[in-house]
Amino acid sequence: MADLRAFLAGAWRIARTVRDARLGQDGSFDGTAVFMEADDGDLLLTETGTLRFGDHAGPAEQTYRYAFPDGPRRAAVFRHDGSPFHDLDLSDGTAEVLHHCGADIYRGGFRVEGHDAWTVRWLVKGPRKDYDMMTRYSRVPVPGE
Image 1: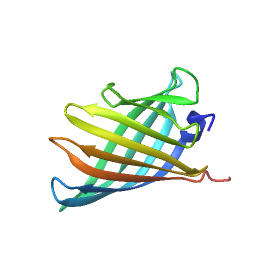
Image 2: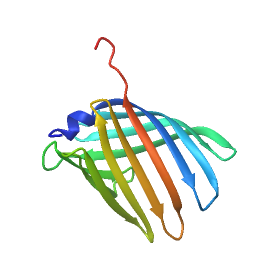
Image 3: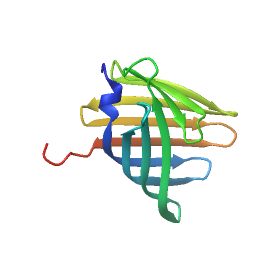
């Protein structure tokens, strides 16, 4: 994939599952992810939907910034507070990323499944966290296409 920025842009349906070994609970998140262009050319990702975890069910939201300092092929991903999260290069359709959050380690696996679908799996281990999270993204069709 030569243009990660163009691939991500737009709206996606999210179906996420979470298996938390530390808490002994499973959860899910269903909603949308919208990659919208910022004034500086970055993409702002906003995920909104319903989180179900244990007895809890309610609205949830998360935001990230995808910057493209070296062109549209590779992104630097930042959390909502501006802190760096990971780099992402899907030029061969897959990517493995690593992020240290204190003593917890996030191992991410990204896979493009086609023009309209991709997945991300995070395995998170450490003294504070122990979970496996799988997210499937399906492109939301644009009316008239």
